[in-house]
Length: 173
Image 1 (tube, rainbow, N blue to C red):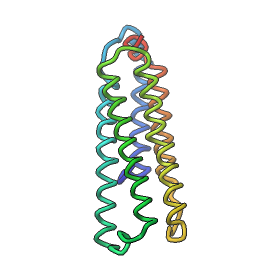
Image 2 (image 1 turned 90 degrees about the vertical axis):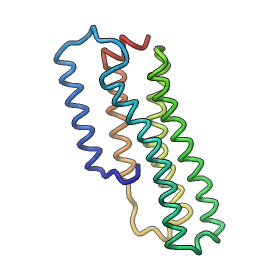
Image 3 (image 1 turned 60 degrees about the horizontal axis):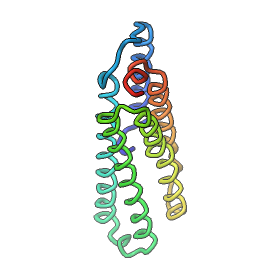
Image 4 (image 1 turned 90 degrees about the horizontal axis):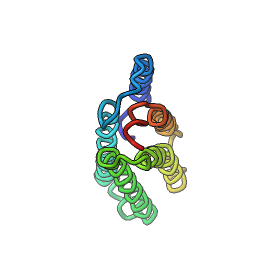
């Protein structure tokens, strides 16, 4: 998830939960159409996709500058191929989910978005952690589980919203 800290996600999730609870109190069961939190989610999914790619290329460039000998390491080159593939997979999933929410009014758009958020979030964070551990475990100073925790919270909140929202139920049939 790049430069976002656990606190960024905690604040984001708290605000999202507050908005969901406030929306439930208003009893807007007649709401329908693409709007509100669906727009926020779609914009965030696109931002997240671009941020994943930007973060990969930034880290790769910094390693090339700070540790040029890494570019000669077969392990590093293999690791970057896997990491690049994972970053692009996440980007395609997230942009695809945002596009489906925007253009498609079938329930499968919601299911696709939920799957994309979980795959690009906790599953990808766990995969990135496992890759780094397997290739560079001896060089890692500490294990950082914050990306897994943050993406797990993020995916849980948006899954709850997509499954419980009256707007989502009325829009995607």
